[in-house]
Length: 387
Image (cartoon, rainbow, N blue to C red; front, side, top):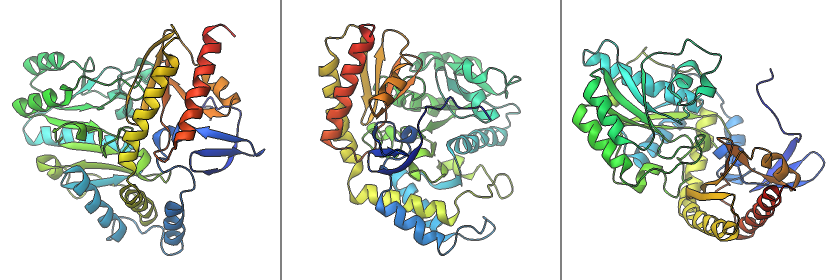
């Protein structure tokens, strides 16, 4: 179906931060399959884990115990501070589970029509419930009637949330990204999550964080909320968890972890032995190779070099981000830069029409950072000059 505006290239294989097309041309991947391949392409640990597991057992269903799933759950609850995990196959499924947890929690409190506060500019998925939660009218277009039960507020505006809390007793949770991804790599104020946590505690709301893009070391911490002292009630993960093998996870603690009962939710493929083997390899490799710390260090280097290289360009409004999640906001629409970058063998993305989004693999090295900076400097300069 014509659901993608694909670029004119087919990749045949990869190696770390490099991708190779079917003609042998090499491209530097500064997008990681949209924040998925944090370990880069063809990482030997993931390759080995998937191959070995595929040779033993791929799938049995969740009618039975799954040893890899249990090991993965133990690692994730230790890393996040949560109590339990539900495994699915994607970020949208993880957020669907979070939405069901919020509604189930509300019903347990006697609220017949529980609602969830969601932010303008957010992105939570393409299923009917998650696109309804998404704060972007373009995503909604053509799919009305939307799923009810969401109330919207401006991102990074806790005062607006306070007004909602004062006037809507049916709200039971807030679902928010610690950094807006599809919404333009928007970094909120430092006290944003702390103020939101305090509000949720006052009003008995669940604080649910969508870490699908920000999680798994992307921002220089295992999870973006760990830049603060805040502990959420629900965390959703996917993307980089399997380094390209589809897997999603919804983690919860306290009452939220008890909201779903046997028969109230499920997944045929979620948490199968193959996907969990890949995710275990990812977590172990990130720990052993200290890739979270590397993301912080390389992100600071990349962002600093970009700020310096682009300083003289009047079309550049801001370079911002956390770790290896970086946005370059320009003064006008710049979607054509994606194809221009491809011509120069660099993979980038543009979101909200005028923000260049960079999500390189956590294994990126200094030489590759220099290539990104130099290529983007030249690209933006030529584009700004009308070339």
